[in-house]
Image 1 (cartoon, rainbow, N blue to C red):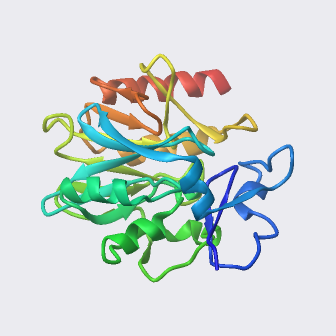
Image 2 (image 1 turned 30 degrees about the horizontal axis):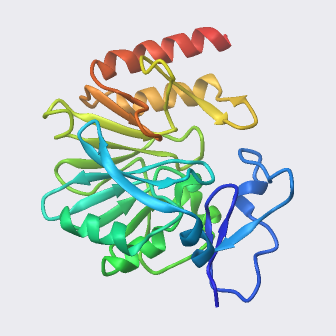
Length: 267
C-alpha cells in the first residue's frame, strides 16, 4: 500500500489503496486547495520527481527539495551533543539524505513549528530508530499520519537539552512553536522561527500572519504574546523557513522593532 503526499502542502498520509478524499490541512482557512483540485503523489512518485539537497545555511546544515515542492520550506539540523535535532521537516526522506545526516551525527529528535511543516516526519524518525517527534498537543487534530514516535507536548515550553528549548508562541496556529538554540550564533543565541515569525525579504525584520496565502494578518494580542514568549531569551540570529531567509545578527533588536512596526501598521 502506498503512502500519499499532498501536492499543495506536503502533508503525508497513511498507507492506502487510493488517495485520500481530502487534505484537512489544505481545507483549513490558513491554507488552500489547489485550483485544479486536491492532488496527491505516492512517496515513490515524489522521489522520482524530486531530490534532496543539503547545504550550509548561515552555520547550520539545511536540507531542502529540488525542484521546490509544496510550501518549499527547508529543514535545519541543530547540533546537540550526541546527535542533531531536525527543526521543521520536509515531505521526503531519501537514502542519500539519510546517509548525509548520519555522517553529521544522525538525528536524536525532530521538532516542528506547526502543521504546515509536518511533512515526512514519520519517515525521518523511522530511519533513525524511531527518534521522538515533538509536536505541540494544541495542533493534534492536524496530524495526518499518526505514528508512535510523536510526543504531543503541552504547556508553553519543553526543554530538549541544556541548549535546545521549544517555546509555544501561538499565533499562526494554537500550538505554533519556535526553537531557542542557546549555542547558536557563536554562543550569542539563535531563534529558529519557521514562519511563526516570518523573516522579511529585506532580512532586517520579521512579520506575522494568520494565513500567508490568503493574506489574513495576525491580531495584536497574538503578536504581543509571541513577543512575550521570546523576550526572556538571548538571541542574536533568527533562522526563517526558507533558504537564506535569516537575520544574521542583531536579531533581538530587530524582533522588537518588528513587533512595534507591525502593531503600528494594524492599529
